[in-house]
Length: 434
Image (cartoon, rainbow, N blue to C red):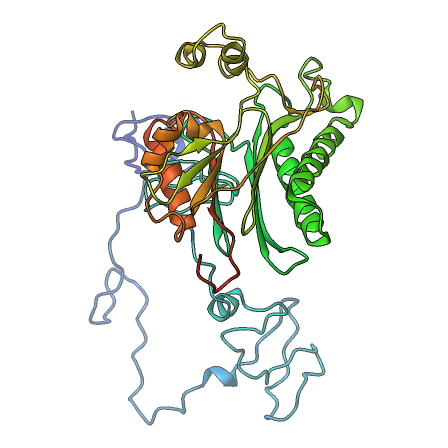
């Protein structure tokens, strides 16, 4: 039996072998057929002398001067097709005739010019818009959808909180703490009567939440009434007549909102048409006129708090009807859950439009507080309202309106709250009151 050659890898597939393998574990090659490796004995001694009859190793020649070395450029190269490349041409010859390849290209720049402006330069040139901070956490940035990236709080919309100061009068409106939007609206302005005396105008509207688009209704009514008053008073229309006509104009503006495509209300076919309440005040040097429909109110607060305050309007509401009929006293009526069910409003679904107007000639200075039930729910009686109106309301109307809105929010803010503060009497700008 012949001795197996000691192989480390299969001669057929080079699979690693172990000692004693007779066949390759990978390809099955018969390892016994491999001839044994001959003894590895050198045939030439390191000194160059022959042994065992081997051939004589040539003796190196005597060292002499070394020939000049070859440089890499001395060798002729070939291209990818095996064609010998021509010798390198001197600088100034732009193209190799054989291959059409340039060998004298200038060094390529690190950056290539862009057709479009480099955004890095644009960012440095244009100042970034200042990010808005969240009104809730005061640290997170507000994204394009109007939510805080830190706490997720929805940011106020334009009508969530509104303030306006127009000369000597001012108004503030706030969404409150429970409603998802502000359905109140206001309009204020100043006009000049034909005799040159001033007239100050304030309109406040409260959208009816059970109707469709109450926010649009209040805004349309406030704008229409305010514009009508500011146009009629300079023409010499009596303030009380101007107030009546302004309420009618506001009613038409709200009614027009009901003239919408049939498909606009297909998802809520039984919902009422847009509706709102309205209350307004006109202040002249000697006359105070109020007008209203619904349960928004106007209060008279004298500067001299020793004089009695007064409520200038009567609600179009279930509670007011019960009191007027003698069926309940005021405390009982307004404690009933039906108290705020209104019996008069502006809108296409109103039973009949009955604008209420009244005129007064106060004998002393004071302020007129024109407001929605979002405020008077927390100061219903005239005496209660007088307690929360700042003493300097006649000279700081905007601050006073802010204080009154804050009182409603501190009380719970269950409804939208809107307040206008109008000093009486109206005096020319820069002149003192008599």
